[in-house]
Amino acid sequence: MRTRWVGLLSVLAAAVLLLPQTRLLDTKPDGNSREQQVRSEQQEQSAKLAAVDQDKEATAMLCMTECTKDFRRMMAQTTSGSSRAKMVDHMMSSHQHMHYVSWIAGSRSVHKGKLPPTKSGTASSYVTAAAARVKQGGKYESPVFQGDDGSSYMVLGVPDQRSKGMGIVSVVMQDIVKQVEAHQRRNLRLVPYPHEGNYRIESVDPNTNQDIHVQSGEDNGNASHYHVKDVVVKFTQPLSKQDLNKIQYEIRAISTRQLRDHYIFRSQDMDARQLVDYFNEVWKPAYVEPHYLYMTNETAQEQQAIVPNDLLYSEYQWNLPSIETEKGWSRSKGNEQVIVAVLDTGVQQNHPDLQGKLVKGLNIVDSNAEPEDDVGHGTHVAGIIGATVNNGEGVAGVSWYNKIMPIKVLDSSGAGSTYSVAQGIIWAVDNGAKVINMSLGNYAQAEFLHDAIKYAYERDVVLIAASGNDNTERPGYPAAYPEVFAVGATDAKSKRASFSNYGDYIDVAAPGASIASTYPGGQYAALSGTSMASPHVAALAALIRSANPKLTNAEVMDIMRNSAVDLGTPGKDNDFGYGLIDVDRALSAATQSSTSLQNYPEQVKARLNEISRRYMN
Image (cartoon, rainbow, N blue to C red; front, side, top):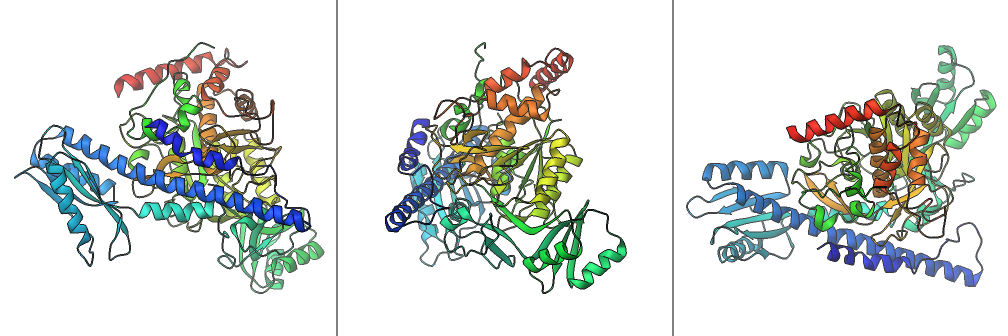
């Protein structure tokens, strides 16, 4: 099945070959070059659309495979009617996309949930056909159909392999496929994102801050976005209360926020340019800049490989074997004391495959709410890092034991402000995060955000960021800041993914095409993007810090660079940086570093704890 999975990606890999190495963003084209640019953009869009279709198909496969295996596991575990009912209740409560489940077992049959209403009785007809097929010992999958509620459904029938005439029939909601399509069209910048006006925002050229109008997803590759009537100001001297009152009066401020020595002012009627001029002329600050938005960037001795039993691993998770994760697990599976902060759209707190993996987080978008995920992006990123391994459920994360700190800095549209991201970084550092993953970005440098990144770096935190999904050489931020480890994406053929940004700031590459991971609703989805590549590297950084806690953040970054497998042009190049990460080689280097001898007692203690945990579980 893995061959089939990799084969499905070959269309995407082939599309990559059609793409030019650079885009003509900064030159004024003549007639012929303009025609070539249009053709190049059309080819790039075709490759991205192929990636979206790939993710949709893979997500539908994941959904059906997961349900089928869950039902077979249930049927293998129980014989009594009461236990059947309890297992069905538990399954439906943790997998809310299962709307109806009928466990066919003669007089001890169990029926839970309701059929979705359909005008022509489509659902009932498919359920009847599925039941008949199951009783004959065959599997059944209906076509996708529309319910009167506007949702998409599919009927699945799974026979009991031990008892003829018995089995399970379920009506499964398939809206996740539509959600993935909408999500990925934004994430891969196939549509203008975010929509101008949603935040009272403007799109600008990141070099000049001159207005540009984003009419297509292609235009996102040369645009940054900011709040129309906001500015971020860092003063050279602390403001007195009188000074602050004066500013608020003169700019007719409707809100003022402070984060350490930075202020964010929002005016009732002055735009960002007027505010910048006002502060530069009257207050002579250290700097004043627009309040930018950031968006998701959704792609030695031979060690014995450890192959986990997670339901979807062997068939769909091509990404982990490709970076030697299975061998690396023999060296380290992580340590719960090394926390990875995920600055994103939040994380589903009760996802079955993330239970026990989350520590207390923060919702910066809504301070009165938990950092729940209302997009899907953050839950997917979190699963790549740390979905529970070897629990027979769903997918496996890169790390077995590192904890995840969910920090919601992006709202339901997948966008968040400089303030939100900066506050998230500082909060993560102050609350014990050792690694921070940022699958988000913009093309404008913001001093406010850079100050927060310096704060984290100076406190020995490893910062990882996605490079972006616009197939452009233009540096994206925060990935291009020198304190941040920048990640590009590869596909299943170890080629640069068609959407992945590139450039001399790229440190390494990691898998980012059709990556299977956790998704809201207790589900699983396949998504593509450098957003998916970045958490592979964040998890590796956490494994390295678990294997050798004495290493500094700079040493961790050097180990990941130096242990990477060279791809493309020999040596460091713009497509892959130092190459594709290698978990086994990186962990081998970490345990053999110059700090290994002085760290030996901690390594022994960690190893004993791991052995103890293994035999207690």
